[in-house]
Image 1 (cartoon, one colour):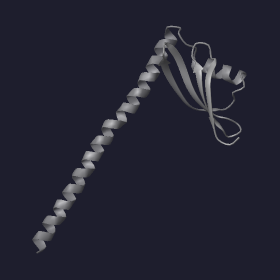
Image 2 (cartoon, rainbow, N blue to C red; image 1 turned 60 degrees about the vertical axis):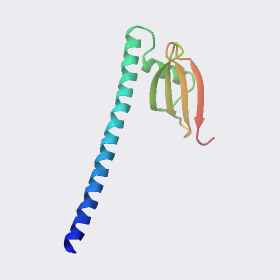
Image 3 (spheres, rainbow, N blue to C red; image 1 turned 90 degrees about the vertical axis):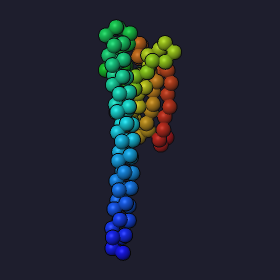
Image 4 (cartoon, one colour; image 1 turned 45 degrees about the vertical axis):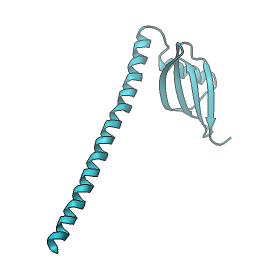
Length: 119
């Protein structure tokens, strides 16, 4: 009886370990994709800046301040959509709202605004 109990316990432990290993491998496969995507955005932005196709992010952020978009930068993404370079910028504004701005990377013109939070 004790041998049967140990066999069942060992099988259960092996199944849990195998399940854990499969999950760990799955996670490991997903994590690098996000990092590679972020690196790809960064490299595309550097290349476009080097070719003079876009303004530096610091210039765009300064112009946003001048245009009345104050706040703390939470996230920036760099996109190339329909032949246009766009900075997608999330700002935490002084009033607590989060603004997501699509900004033309060539001239710092705000193309689209979405806001969340208290009014």
